[in-house]
Image (cartoon, rainbow, N blue to C red; front, side):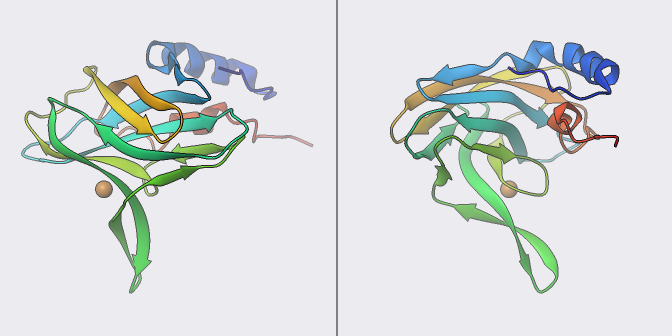
Length: 166
Ligand SMILES: [Cu+2]
């Protein structure tokens, strides 16, 4: 984990400390997975989504082939969002390319891992594990923390050194 060099360090640090519990990175050779989280599911919702940052620290491109969340979900798909007739729709993709030296961020409104057929609602504060299978790096088990229903789009946004004051 790297701490951003943001000048507004205190809020970032506070946020960082509050998410350290689920920020513990998981690693499989060249792939580092950070900050995997899911939203609590309201009422009768049968589907959930998981978000995370996938860092490919290797010299070669890799591919996320599949994700599994047994036993909490019946099936798991990799989804993205596409614009169709001015409507944002979710669309399943077969695989996800992880370019060498790059970070692919899964976040609400974009790429996500879809949990289909949840066997029980996801409650805030709960944790579960998922496995990700990469073509080259193999399988990695990651911890996922469930955050509140209204959790903001991406906590990692708070970690970006984006608030430059000139
Ligand atoms: Cu989806």
